[in-house]
Length: 376
Image 1: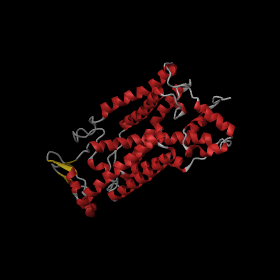
Image 2 (image 1 turned 90 degrees about the horizontal axis):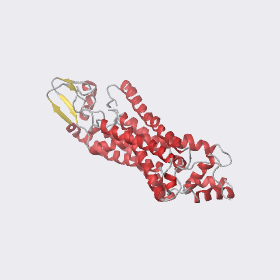
Image 3 (image 1 turned 45 degrees about the vertical axis):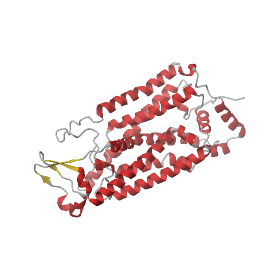
Image 4 (image 1 turned 180 degrees about the vertical axis):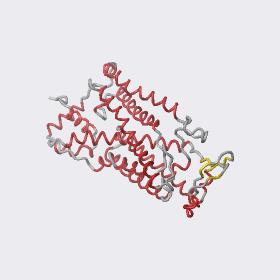
């Protein structure tokens, strides 16, 4: 006789078995008795019907929809309000500077002058190749169905980031080596300003690291569309990788690993999917010159919201199991689960904000003549 899960642990185990991905469940299957395994698998063979009106037309879904859609509406407003709007602190200095201004060379220039752009290129190519290899490996093992999960969406997005970053770095290395980077500067006779030394001047860096040219103002060229797409993907992924990794390591893994009857041990692919992407992104954050304006948490919010709505549409059309147990709308605690995950977005995103501010504070003090990033 099949039984419904009696506690949170059983519910999470149901979710683990429901992934139907061998590398996720092998160790658990070996540890659980055949009868227990049959119960869990059978439970997921008969899930709560998700394609009925009764499943959706209730107070639980209404509250969950409010939790999901309200931040998305606010995020859209935040993008409209802040993306491209003037920064009042900088408006007097340059009328073209905005809150989220990205300069053309920010996408490939390292944070310190002593670091050659080729070093950042090498790291990005290595990260891209490594993550892509593990993703292909995971697809071979689990099939295309792995993209039913938010973790894989984010992992693939990080790969896209490093792929684009590699292309920008290749272009930057060419600009750097040919001296063409000087073309990224526009001339304005009306003002005087600090002039950053060009690559060809690095040999005499100590003498010209600071120069003031009266009645001349050098304005760096702002990035194009792809540059802003690259910046947006960077900030969106920053919050998403912390969210996925923290949920796994702080919630799922401790719960399963501390239950001796299950003998749960994560496989290599699971560890990589929930750690290596964040490590690579942190290293890139320390090395690059990209800014991290706070308002782009809006893209992170929209990214998660789109995933949830995608799941709702699929489950409204086809009755099937949920990729994550806290998405199931049949539980009376569903609104609390949704609210809890929504609130987690704030610390996950601002963790990276803190990292970038700490980086700017420390490196600008330790390497005042070499640090070349702008404060976010």
